[in-house]
Every structure is written in C-alpha cells, then in structure tokens.
Length: 267
Image (tube, rainbow, N blue to C red):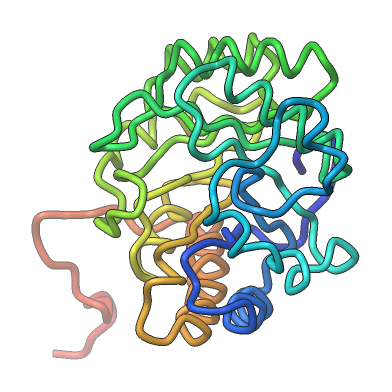
C-alpha cells in the first residue's frame, strides 16, 4: 500500500537503458511489475508544454519520443521521476511539468548531489518533498540510508522512503544491510522501498529478506545480456525474498546441529 493505493507486485521497474522500445515492453511484461518509472526529462512532451518555459531539453529526448507508445498508462501505473535534477527547484519544476501534461500527480523525487556517485542531495530532497507534498503530490523520494534523513522526509510529507542499496547503476548489490535493517525497524508508517544497486536476482532477494516492502530497479534488468529473462528472474526473486522474510530465517549458530534428533535413538 502506497498512499492508500494497493499494488500486487512488490517489484517496481524503470524504463531507461533498453536497446529498443520493443525490448522495454517485453522486459516490463516479464517482470510482472505494475508500477513503471519514466523520466519526465527523457520523454517527448506535448508541444503545449513548452509554452510553460519547461521544454524538455536536448535531442536525446526526441530520440525517446516513442517510449510511451510501448508503456501504456492503461496497463501500468506510471511514476514520473525527476532524474537529471541537481537542485530542489529543478525537481519541483519537473514534477509540476509531469503533472501538467497529464502523466501523474505522483512523483519519484531525485535530486542528485554528486555526479560521480549519483548520491542524493538530501537537504534539497527534503525541500523538494516538502513543497511538492504541500501541492498535493504523492512524493516518493530517492534518498540515503540515513535514519535521521528518513524521519525528516516523512515529516516533510513523503509517501515512502526509498534508500539506495548501492550507487545507482553499479550493480554491486546491497552494501548497507545494517542500515537497511535499522530503517526497517524504525520506519513503519510508510513503505520502505530499496532503490538502486540491485545487479542480479539474489540482490533483490536480499533486499526483500531485510524487510523492504518493495524494490525498484532499472539497470539490473536493462543491462543484462538477456533483459527479458532477467526481468522474469527478478520477479521470482522479489517473491521469494518476501516469503523468506515473512517466514523468519533460522538463527545463525557457530556450531553444527544434527538434522535428525538423537533422542529416542536405539543404541
């Protein structure tokens, strides 16, 4: 449940980096995801939108003009994101543009603070969250794994907390398990969604076993040798990880314990 809306799938997928629109559509279908993120700055917007002074930038956006032809809003819940924004003001304008042209009044807020690591500028993220939540947006912010920042985002109106598991696009897997556990234990009022770092199916399972409510990924699927097959693997991995979390793993012990009890064994 996010902001009162129910989703059956705990896997959220991005729509960038695929080799073609057809591959994008096949991979998203195989993932079983219901929510798909789309970068407002990387899709062709209606000509009328340019009159607001927020024209999509660059020729690369024109090359992605047909993205929405392959991801139907009738089939998927589209989550616009503010990818490519480096200030709160940019993120706020981008979110407003996405709503103006009818994409959604939901937004994944990304405000990047460092170009090399793509780590978030948490102060700017909090500010953008506060402004957009006040304007009626459902805000899902990409953030660090800092519990203090998470609490401030919730106070600012965030509908979910989306900490990174590793740098965006790195594929290194979950590098901050202890911090994710702390977040899971202390963040209970809104969903906890791991965003960034997943490289393969086992990474997604680990994220879910740590107690995440969902996992968001893009590169882990799109950059695989077979994105469609990897999308299917991620689908099963998220389901398995959630089931394992609910089941409760056995405690770890230093020494062995016999699988067959010795009591009652004839000698």
